[in-house]
Amino acid sequence: MIGIGLEMARPTAVSTPPPPPSLPTTAVSQVLLDSTETVPVPTLLPTRISVSPVVVTPVPASTPIPPLTPTPTPMPLPVLENPIDEKFAATAQEWFADFLRLDAENSGVQQYQANNFVHPIALEIDADMAYLLDAGRVLAINLETAVPPQVLLAPDDLVENVRVLEPVDLALMSDFLLVLDRAGDVYLYDLAAQTWTLDRYDRPVEASSGHYFVAIDAPNNYAADDPAAYVRSLLEINYQFVSQYGNEAAPLWNLPEARGVDVSALGDKIFVLQREMHDAMGAVYLYQDTRHIKTFQTRFPIENPLQLVATETAVFVLDQEGRRLLAFDPLSGGLLQIYQLVQEDPISVFWADNSGQRLIFAGRDKLYLWQQPEHLAAIPGGDLLSGVQPHDPTLLAGLTEYGVPIGGSNITFRDFQLPGAPRHYRLGVHNGIDFYWQPGTDIIAAADGVIVRADVDYIPPTAAQLAAWWNESQALGYTSDETLDRYLGRQVWIEHANGVVSRHAHLRMIEPGIVVGTAVTRGQKIGEVGNSGSPASLESETSDAHLHFELWLDENAYLGQFLRPIETRMWIERILSN
Image (cartoon, rainbow, N blue to C red; front, side):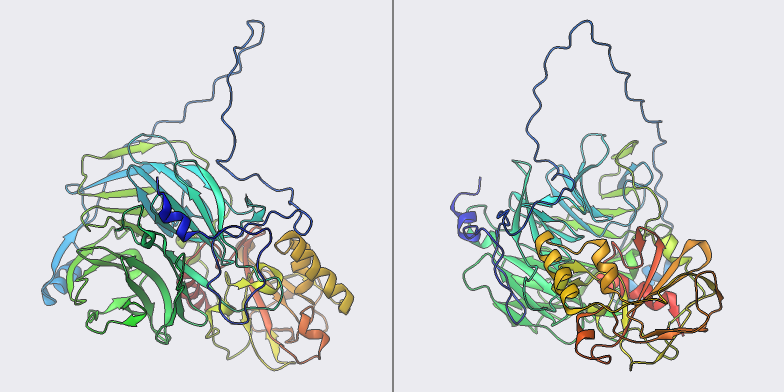
């Protein structure tokens, strides 16, 4: 039990969300959305793990016995193969660091049936339970019992009448699990009671705010009755700062001009992982009481970093897109160790205990347990994912022959203009890439294909209609699919090979001859940049003009979904070429 510590960290709940600040916010925790007058409860999936225990009553003898659930097909035990890569070994020797490698002699493997999880992006461990984030789903995995993962939370579930959009990170805080949503909300899961509550509400009701929180952490080296154990740290990447809540000071401090990747708390020390703006190199920065501690410097080249975990003995960085784990000295930043991870099917996330000795890695349908070679298990069953998975690296690597839809354009500099970023004005998430160009700029087909939608008879919305859309979003707490389609204005959709569909929105005009059924080739003009459908269109035809471009891998999966923001940028830069 946590006693007074948690009470000091969690303010008393209020009935409705607070109005948004005009600047980036460090919103209070535990804001409940329980006023049915202003926010009706959507008829969506119920929150998981909040049902009452079922009372089992005897079955009358006359009642037919239902058929047994089929036993899952047995699976062969996993085999860990990871031949030495001499480049890793040579690099470790050059930097006077230890070289370690996951193999069958030092690591166990827990294999699950295909499509339990594809590309997890967050992992936390509490004793013998693992909590994994994949495809927007929070999974509970028992490390001691051979049972399939259990889904605890998923998109469209409800927490305190707030609809879950898309979780992006996890953090363990004493006896609680924190789940950060792309909207900026934080959901709190009581591990003992197995119930969800709203820890932080961050969907502004009034003005549009541009903050984009991508990572959360809490220290794990304080006693449960210490208020410091309940200080949550959030990494923001649009304005580039770290903010904290759960303490009276609620500090906020700016970061260097770079792309935020992850944050890790070790007591009152906050480590931040960033990637350079214009290349794939990374660095770790240490802060204490909001001050940058410059005696800590990671001089070793960090490449394509994905994750950061700080422990008492090492600061770990997962880089090279999951093929390598680096261990740095927590005082100086000097390189201590290089771990060669599995190369054929790269790891996407890991966890380390506070000592830095217990390590667990996760990849596609597998957990790897460092220094537990006796732990081998193959576990069938589970709540399997179906259909196209937009975060599947194998699928994404096969997307070729696509170009930028505006000739000579580059991918936007701002991560806030990429898929996955929050859209606070409509309480939703951005599904596309924004290309800001002058109104009337030519829009071209990104690849060969056939027109499947062309809004040639588009009628602009009135001020009253836009107000009605906004009011609907406020009432629901999110943007419905129908309203989102209206906000996108005049559109052209092109179906390409393998069922991929590119969507072009906010067009000022559609090129004559572009109608449903028309075959187009890469580089062919299909329309012009505009601002149709956007609130700014009421001001003028030029205000906030841009192309909103989406790539849908099927009708329910878009490019950038279920990925870390830094991964979204990486894949978009690879897929779209000039």
